[in-house]
Length: 521
Image (tube, helix red, strand yellow):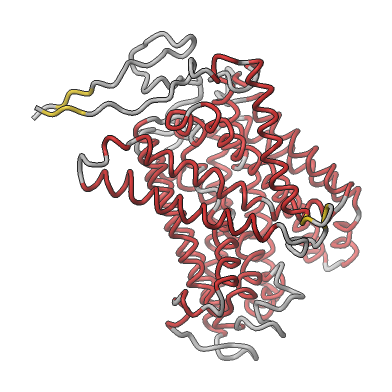
């Protein structure tokens, strides 16, 4: 039995003239192909998520919302991410393109929705980069204080000038490593991700050994895995929002697809591997921490408001002892630094793709002739991150905090659009087989709907000034103003680009399409 694929020919890498080897009109960018294998791609996905940083900053907040049901909420947050990961895998197999969400939503829904989806990814990544740089800076001085046993050294982080200079130095270093290509990125990440997972494994083992011996220890119960035992729906959705944030970043494996060996299949497999490693790490750490210190709001309890923003800093000594405890500080710093470096991958390559397809100025499409990286896009992302963090820090710490809270809105926005794009793009193929129906239709739609529900609930909660730092603009929560304002800013920029680059917005550069049916004989 043979197959006849009657899909239309695609454009070449410069002017859209049909050329052999192109798929669906996507263009090659000149990136360094075959630079990353399956393991390297999975490591990049794990690193971008920053599991140790996510755990130390989110364990306490999640426990405060859902109590001992924290493991169940970790699983619930994993579900929509897993379903969306299948959508990414299917789209990548059909069209491996470093523009990922931007390129795929253009192909499914047209240039305007695709442009806004790309903007959601870019602005979310800039926010995360600035936050990671700030966290890495704080832990740098905290670790320096622990090593020297000098409180005045740790207190340097509170000096705004020292903090900003250190932060900008870390951003510059991360930008330089990303600028030099995927080979340099991969080498750094193997060491940093390996350190993170090793320290987490040691922490889990020692926390389990301390279970029952610390004042707030609790015995394990299978009821912890029951999401229906959460006290209220509001508490569940709040915990779910935090859980979804903890998985964000796995799609970096896909944005490196044009530089990966076996670009059609390897990135999708790497993303799924990264997801499994993450959910396993989160469940093991969450369960072990609860058994050791419980989820109460006093003493060592995870939900103690005095320590919930940085759980590992509080648990390092009691669980691991003073000597090994310092390794937790090292792991958090390594986690933030590693993620800071790899998070440049999705933003730089999305900007590169948008520029290649004339959705952004052509100058951002330049690829470094030696390193085969989107050099200018990487540098611009670093400069934008440094400026954003510096301005927000000087203007108001509250504004910076609220910007981070608004991040969840952007994440749900572009993930959900990509999931729906998968089902719509492959709509004619859904009846071809049970596999196509499930992986190209059912899973992406369910994942998209779940994220849309979280998006709407988050949007509703953001209206309340009590959400985030507690500040307001004309009675409306500042988190809402920032989140919606950033999306509207993207709309304004899109309208400007529409005048400067009419061909893209007329669908003449990257064409909206539906795959033709595959005829069998």
